[in-house]
Image (cartoon, rainbow, N blue to C red; front, side, top):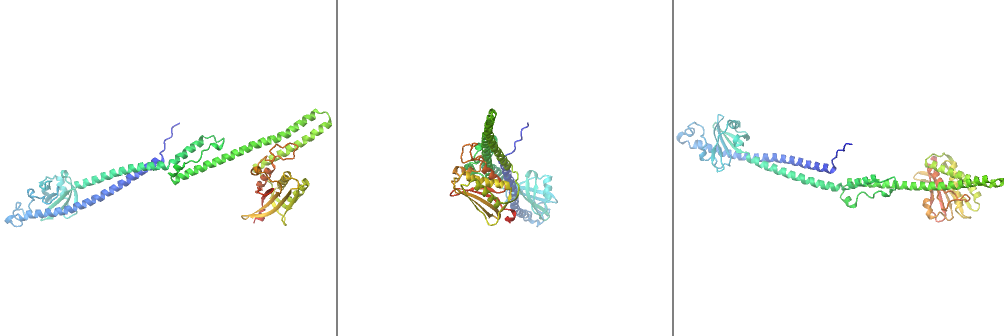
Length: 509
């Protein structure tokens, strides 16, 4: 299998992005600074050039006319040509001029004289090649200063003026401007590289510290993938991030860590519910097996006895016991099937059920089954109806009354109360079955609706009157299937069971 290409990390991407950004900003800033500085230096150079050109022109005029002797303003001098004489390099063109100042006189586009001020202040005549002379001749007198390449002399900033037909060109070297620009550019480059390196290191440290909780998230996720989740939920890890790492994390990382913590808690809760369901299922299977095994053993024993007995009077008692055990097994199997149907969410019948009449009918049956108890009913003046399965609702009420009769002593008063209530705009019908007996033991209140839960933890024998522990579980399942619930309410004395059912749609409006 080919190896996967390693993907860049978020830390590397952020660091690289910051370094590139710093270098880009430094480059743009350096370029802008260099352009502005060059323009400023050229402006200063042009000012110096204008001043140098004026002194140079005055020097030329003084030497070309004032030293002409008796020849008049246009005679003698430099061969009596009538033009200003050439500047004598030995007599000091460089007086008051900066080092490198160039002075050139052109006549008819030809260079008459060219000299440069040396480091000692003296002027030196220089020879210009044809390209340099052409470049100087191209400079228009009176125009703005221009930059020209004079070959061996280097780059110059020059300015031309006209005086009596001759063109005088004054120039200053651009070497100083270039040197200053190079120093500035190199300094900014070094500063930019230093800033990029420092920013990269700081970004890497900050991002690594900020993303450290994500490493905890990754470690926790890997641990979860290695856990045998088919077993218990006890092996799941605790919170993803430690308090120390959480202090250095960002809001986004904290949200991710919080989401993973919530996911782990959700998985842990789901596994705990599954474990509890599995435990209940195992207990259910054990109790169901025991409940079925007892009557089956009775049936088998009496069947064998009937087969061994040769007399009819010996067969009849065994057959009666077989009938009782078979009937008990039949009821238990029916209860288990009903619970299975309720767990599967199978719908019940839905039709108008006169609840008031149902309570009165069950009250008559309860008085007949328990004449040693006091049975009462508190019903509203108007009949109360609900929508549901009449047979199953009879089963719920009968089971609650039977439960009250079996677990309370003689003389106990059992009262059934029916009322209509409204909660948040929705109508409900409530049936309370209360007794003043000893009540439900505290250790059973939390699991009274669980299957096979009985006040007597001992197994029910065939001959006993105790139930299988499925009655309340079935009653609550039927109530839930009707969209309601069955609750055990706190009471100062006795026990109060409340059957809550939704009121018919017309009554809820």
